[in-house]
Figure 1: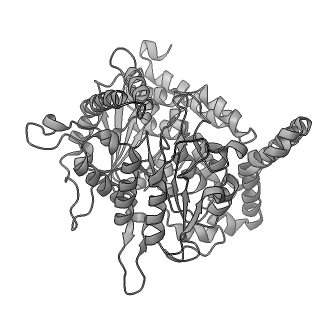
Figure 2 (figure 1 turned 90 degrees about the horizontal axis):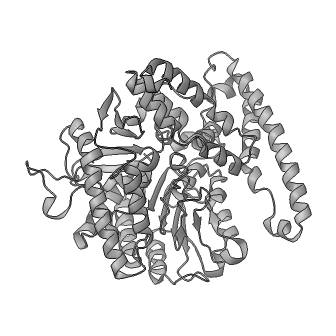
Length: 553
């Protein structure tokens, strides 16, 4: 009501109070399913709160509200990995207990034996009750431990949202564009190391004919039909091209104009021009990284390309906080976890796990998947290959813990209506179930570096929870992977092989006097950008190249 009478200051106070309650909705005393259900009831709240703040002339508040109200589950995971150096110095026993309790809360959802529970329903009910009570007890203890930590000198903000100045540091290598969508207004908050600018997007609307909701629904429906028939593929291509042009006109074009001229695709001697997209709401389901006009309308009146991939190397992040956390050197993180850090591309903590699911029971064969994994094994020394019956759900989960790189080549899926519907299909999926978003999210992989999911729909989120990154790529980041490459829709098998080939060519670091050649995860964004440009040279159909995204620093 306050916003309706344009009393934006009062409305801002109300929205700020509502956003502050979200951590209670997703309290760590609840299991993951209950937390997701609770957050689903607050969809759009953060976007509306940011819009109210902008109407009140408070862009800094708008950014903080988006950081508080989005990526709540990711923030909880980051809390568990936050730098506890100061706390450990002042109260080592308290720091140790916080890590112990957090580890239990992270793993509690996976503590039951699915096979045993299915055979004994009464045991299942009993185990669930015991586990729920134990979770609530430890969640209450965790709240008390954090309260005690905040009473110590210099730790009043322990596990709280970082300051805006710290968040802006995430934009040290290039601008971060937070695109907020709300029925009240739509804007881009352009974050750089030194400034925060607002770019109003008057032509981006949430509802109504031609609005975001309608266009997102049309595109997602069309992409879901790719592969059924040539007619469906042609229709999807037409809709995708129209959507990419619209995204340029209403979002990317105005943002890039505000940023000023940028270099086109980087040459071998030029530092890449980086840009991070942080879309909110339904916009997070669309390929903003590929926005642009292609074909005869590709160039503007000044001859400059009217497309994002011709001007920037793009990545995605769920929040600024997540990006800031991912830019912390991993050797520092490993030291906090008690590890020795990465020993190099061929060392104990730098090994590649390659999963070949070219022949998955009950699913169409993917002959190129085997070729992908063979290509990797030839290029990367000491690659661990799991294929056929050896690539079981349990084996993949267990082997991941001792590897820094993951390449999964096989079938993936995401039900856009189901927040828990993302899955990778291992060899025994019909007996043990697929490898789900929830399974991966529970992992804590301190030495994880990069994952490449050569499987369809692995970066496609759930429409009911668009701000929580509830997809396989997001789950891998929750688990600890710094860089994730994934696809937003079904990709042709032969195209997937070329993409992997081109990507790993760019990811290989040449030999140095002090180190052999090996994989360099810091090259991930540029390697994917170059791979996509090579795919475009072979086939200008965006269905074959625009699906791929990079998430991370």
